[in-house]
Image (cartoon, rainbow, N blue to C red; front, side, top):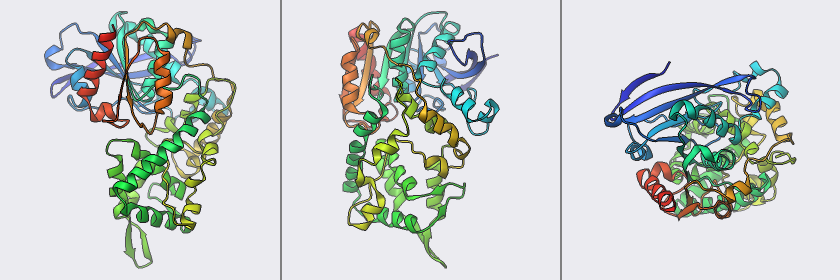
Amino acid sequence: MSVSYRQPGVVLTDRRFTVPLDHADPTGETIELYAREAVASDKAHQDLPWLVYLQGGPGFGANRFIGRPAWLGRALKEYRVLLLDQRGTGASTTANRQTLPLRGGPAEQADYLAHFRADAIVRDCEAIRPQITGGAPWTVLGQSFGGFCTVAYLSLAPEGLSAALITGGLPSLDAHADDVYRAAFPRIERKVVAHYARYPQDVERARRIADHLLTHDVVLPNGYRLTVEAFQSLGIMLGGSEGSHRLHFLLEDAFVRTPNGHELSDAFQEEAQGLLSYAGHPLYALVHEACYGQDARPTDWSAERVRAEFPRFDAAKALAGDEPLLFTGESVHPWMFDCDPALRPLRETAELLAARTDWTPLYDPARLAANEVPAAAAVYHDDMYVDTVHALTTARAIRGLRTWVTDEFEHDGVRAGGPRVLDRLLALARDEA
């Protein structure tokens, strides 16, 4: 039974659906999906077209908005919006260290999680769309990994779409994970260099923290083991519009003087553990590299292997000389499953996923080349998370897709730019139509 309630300027309705775990076996095991419907208060009784929002990730539930902020306010001018918690995230059947043992051992858990990629999310959308729209197609807005899902949607079920809007999420159609990370590490280094140019005092601060971590065993209050590699991974913030500033504020007062000498402050540790922990989004760590699996080659901890090809990211070598410490970005490594208490019980499961060789294609180049769905994508000029060259190559491969390439925003432009970004994409898609 759906439940409706109000926030300022918006009526919200909780919706729950039952879908197959494996859409190839529609009579088999099922899971539950949760979604929140949003409609402007003054349009609550109008017959409006639908827009479904696919969140970035993988592993994150849809935004829990209060009122009508960011892009949502613009969307509510003409749509009913469905904020979908993709399978395994948010309030949809949870997949984490607490629930996955219900599946059995690591092998059973890995088999289960193999059903949590973009193709399954598209099939989920198609399973629930008739219940929501009465069968009418809807517009999809995909942010980051949600954009990957949108390209899969155009490949697998374009008949379900009236328009496709993508922000910072055009994937390579055929790159192996190794190719993705070989393109990523130079971008990450550029972001770090830009950060140090903005905040040159952070060069010494980062080196001091890294040196402390190389010579001390630091365990954060939540049980997270803060190694130098974990500290470097805080560079994931540098891909967001405010990330450089947030990293600077984290570094500026990292140490306090104690009877035992200088130690990392409680305030630093508290903030760092919140940034590093995967407790709220474990699927990100578990299936992140699986998002790039499309053939018989395993992903095999791609980011960890490729990182070794870029020795400038080696903290010990940087500190042995006078090089600045390089932070890393959006990548998952096996040591995370040792450091993070939310991931430790899932280490063997993650190993099995990394070794898996039966991934199926997520995208259909022939169908994309014949695309008839109005489509538009925002491509951020030096996006730290999604390679611009890969994105534009894919854009050219999707018939009729129009791009807006901009350096005005970082990867989170749909949040930071809100109405302007959505306005631009709608205008591009409608012009093409």
